[in-house]
Image 1 (cartoon, rainbow, N blue to C red):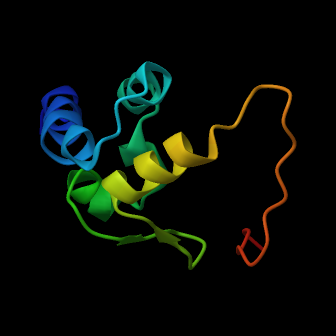
Image 2 (image 1 turned 135 degrees about the horizontal axis):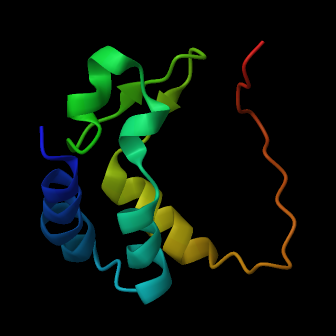
Length: 90
């Protein structure tokens, strides 16, 4: 599978139509490898518009939702983030 092409298509066909236009967020989507965060047998699905199971039992949100949330919270480098209700690996 051509992951770079899949990533480009994800951004252009899923992310931008959801009004995610912040250049910093779009740049992150091209540099953070979604496929590295899912189980090996799910790598080809990393760019599909669906939730995916994570190896720790959690779920990865749809790409468009992750991008929209990241844009809407507008986290800055100096910000501190508290995760509530997430599952870490045991």
